[in-house]
Length: 523
Image (tube, rainbow, N blue to C red):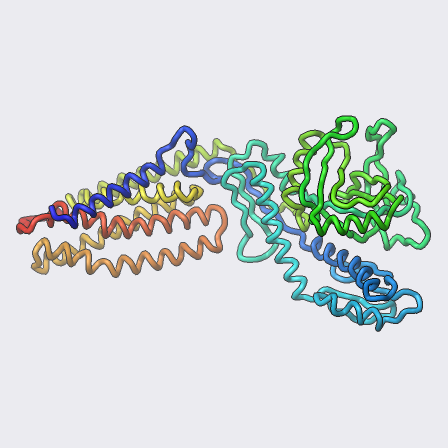
């Protein structure tokens, strides 16, 4: 046996050992190939991002900026109020004209288009700016959801956009232990805001009194818990909260659970450097006033600002320990930039997953056995060659999935079956080419060499076109479609290796290892 054939055999054995080791379960890792939602069970959600929330937040920040920039530009702060989710109105201060504010503000609000009205300057978000905000909102929502799911320890989740655009997100959570809690954590917007209270709270939302100079258009009426002298919740009261939002949860650096004065669960938080600067300005300019800590449009607490506060604070409320821990985790992972609406929700039980595995594997095994029988009956000894190459193809495919932690889904099993079919088809093309060369009068050695050489171009062409289709499925598909594409891509790459390298080495080992002429070939 020549040295060239030896290194080929060693390479094949090395590949076999490497990929077989990858799929053998161990005590520390019994599930080498993660199972998808349809095989393991879990939760499937389709959620819509309400991008109007992000537009409204952008306008609210612009409202605050209009006041601060005017003062910085040497003119009195104007009266500013939001008109809609994408526009706000700047009314000049007494004895000041519109041109002064245009000079200071127009360059600052490049993402807005401004026009004069009878009351002042109306700024409206430009279409390009709105599209950018909506796109960023969806991407940030996906990132935030992913952070929350990772913090919960859900293995191999799928969080992807539905299609190539739009505002819908597909979330698949295989094997979740507490689906209700996980869904609630994902849906929680956790939009934390620090806003100034105007007037006196009331048990009646219509009975909230406002101080002089403050109108109903300047505030939001939000509910909050009412506590008795012992700190127990004994009802609901309503607060008039200034619409401007100078500090939000985006300014937080960290959040953790801690104990309150009487041992109750509370949430301590700290700010980023920029958030600390804004919080210091907010508290320093509103001493002896109530500061509302608003979470998802509900007032958690409204302490009186006794002194200037810079970088940390505490959220109190009627929290259960688990609720406080979940909320702290949500705040750490970041608040959603917009609320989510659940469009579709379904739970797949593990029994259905086991049934899918059993039926899928049964179908694969039956099809595999029938294919092997057909190949052996039709091609005899060469058919055994194809079976050996096919088994190595399957080992490589599963081993690659294990190494890359690719999730196996039911469509993925279909992809494996399709891959094996294409792999055997590659061998069929080679064998038929060898037969043609033998009928043309070539020697067995020459027929084998020509068969592999002439079939190479056809097989590469068919594999490349299928790989291109699989790449598009992977790029634009979600969940199970990606699982199908992954197994197909890996299997096709393995098929080229086994059909040309492994199968040829087997022929060389049996027929071409010596220079003596070969009398016959089993094909």
